[in-house]
Image (cartoon, rainbow, N blue to C red; front, top):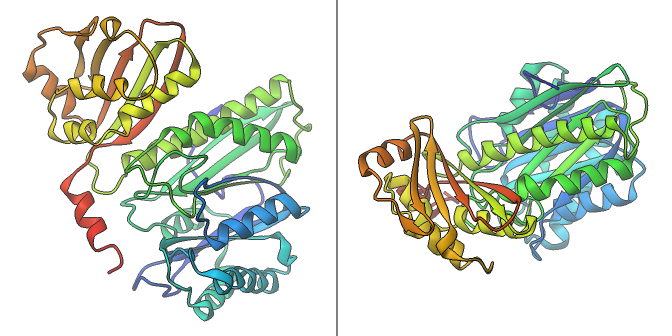
Length: 407
């Protein structure tokens, strides 16, 4: 597998664009398109929030019932959530506009929205934006980057990644982009994410690979503990690499899974590190747990702790907060066996051994915690299972951003 420069346009046959439509923002791109020159098999995961935005309901129907997909239309600024029948009808109108502009079936168009909940979309601007995007779309790196920038809300940077690998001697590519900075919490899938691949792979196997992988990637991140109404992760596979069809239980499938995992994990970490107001990416690795599920629960309990997040922001080695978060996770363990370390580019230091402070050097610990990427390592000494979760620090700016988000 080779990491390459790119995103949703890296795979053969995919085009993208970003455009300014005036949905809510001024003087910035706020609509994007991802388009395939050939019909695609689809897979998707969606929010577990009972309150689901209209685009989520629309996309679930397309993924589950349509024979193929070919385009995604995304807007930023207004989420089209809690908008009733009118909001759902706007998904239909968006799909109709895209079908007309692109010359594809309406049922092959997916839609996605992000932004303020409870506001209706200015559908006339959406329809105008679709027509503009259809004319602007290209297969270039620049076009993919513009699409990644257009879907941002409180994100401070766009997020995209791509990889190449071989299937039966044929080069295959997976690329992707996502957005997510606030209202991020692991529950099935958490953000807007769009992956494209030119692999020949059946829908059932693509769905299996995606749903198994989000458990250890997108489901393992948290910024603020809030699960969005709009969480959507879509994968489009158009088969234009013309590789031998990937089959379950083969080395080729494992290659595909590894590439998909790299893309998903990379995008997930980008979101965690770009949490609203964040100054640091927090990684929590739990090792030697008794079960995989318990390792996941323990690592997520630490990464979700507001006190731990505040500790990372202050570069304060108050590691008792980490033991506390492990303790209320619901997992049973012996606290007198735990070893705990802090690690970053500045070094590594053991903070607790067998549940007791090592009398570590505070100045060294602070230096390690002052890096933009910090890892907490927890050795449970219970078994052989491990898991990693990602989050960020909690800063004053998080409150500032969310106290006036609508304005």
